[in-house]
Length: 421
Image (tube, rainbow, N blue to C red; front, side, top):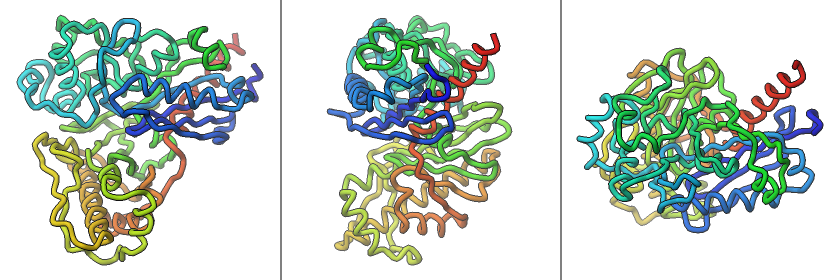
């Protein structure tokens, strides 16, 4: 393959569907497309089918020039599968919490770590073990799809496994996780951006892609969005997707309940994700209604409403409380006023998120870069800007482009080493 014309593929597994992005060697986005899951987030075979559909519908010339692929996924969506990757049942969504596992969590990992929350992956793993008994493999969404490309489900990427108990600093499982009878179900963890292997030959032929396609360890969906935005040291990133995610780079890792810490290059990316987000808005309004009703909102005025727009009971950040109840009433007669109140409630959660990160040791951001579908709403941006007291700007690069950058970077390094040798 001609290195100058080779391409990198990024796959973003979201809450409602999959988006792919293809970058050329200059890092320019040349293709983006998406597909919704047939039945929902918890159906692993839907993830694979959406990926297959998007890849096979790429123009043949693009498919033939793909040199590397990396995958991001919703942080915390976990499934049990057989050694050959066959799902044992539905996955457990990142939004599910299991307070009944709190006592077991305390025995397994230290308080305050990412895996100690009843809304974390370790709690979901314990619930899956309780339901299935013996499990060959516990895999997060992005890791399972990476395994689908390889037809080898041995690996896991470090960022996707923090909430399962992986310790970035020590490069080992925290507490006494590794001593458990089920520890063989845990993945062999690899750093984000490392090469996991080449695509399985049968899979390459099924998808119509080169048989030497590199499969690169990706990251979480929110991290991919941050990479796509290319933020500066003083920037905070808010992802306005189905859920609300706040992250920023810090010189040293910060710790706390509901906080995730990821290492990208020599910098630490720290933050948290609320269960609230645009998913709540779509429960009440279509995209067309959201656009029309938003135009009726004066973002410089308060709605007079005070909502906690959670999709269900339970929150993970800025507070870690599995019993926190949504507040979505009273609903006014005016739909525009109702939307106004919901947007203010989300802005309040975002503001508290940045305050929480600052309390834990992060420098307060001087500017916030917005990503995701909600970043296109000018009224929401002005409401957030007024509540945060900071400039708020938008970035339209999809998260799939961020994870494609990881694939591109690793492909370049691999080609450089090959040329030197």
